[in-house]
Image 1: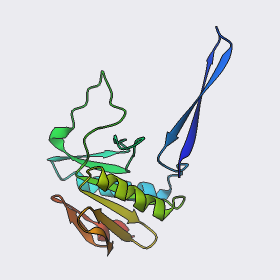
Image 2 (image 1 turned 45 degrees about the horizontal axis):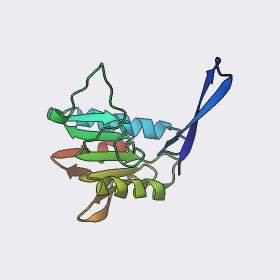
Image 3 (image 1 turned 135 degrees about the vertical axis):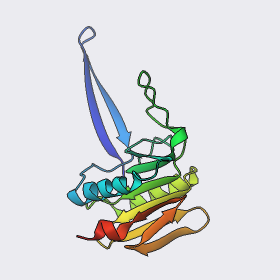
Image 4 (image 1 turned 90 degrees about the vertical axis):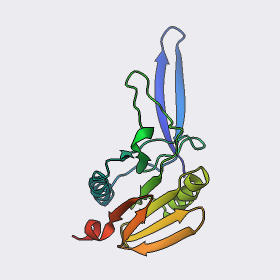
Length: 166
C-alpha cells in the first residue's frame, strides 16, 4: 500500500500553487509503542557489534525507494558526508529488519521482504509482535518462521527472547 504525502509550495511571482505528491513505500505511518520498543531493543543488542552499523529508517535505492525499519551494514560501507546527503542509499545491507505495526498489513510487509532480498539484501527479519514471530526471508530458503528465538544471520545474533520478555 502506498501512502501519499502532499507538499505544498507557493510561487508568488507566477501566482501558481504547485502541489508535489510524494509516494512512500509505507502505509500511513502510525508507529506504535510496541513497534518503537522492539526497534529500540534490537538497536541496543546491535550496538555490541563494532564491525556493523545499524541505521534506522534508511531509504534504499530499490524501486521508488524501500525503507526498512533497521538496516545493518558492514561499518566500512557507511561514510556519511555532512555536506551532501544521500536520499537513496545504493548499497544493500547485510540484514534488513522490519517490525510490523498494528496498523500495517503483514502480507504487504512480507512482500516488501521479498523485494529487498531480490534487490540484493542477504536476509530480512520481519518481526510480528502479537505472536512473537520472526519471519526470516532469504533468496535460498524463502521464508523460515521462528518464535521468540535467538536469530543469527551474517555474524549477527539477536535474542528475541529478551525482547519479548516483559
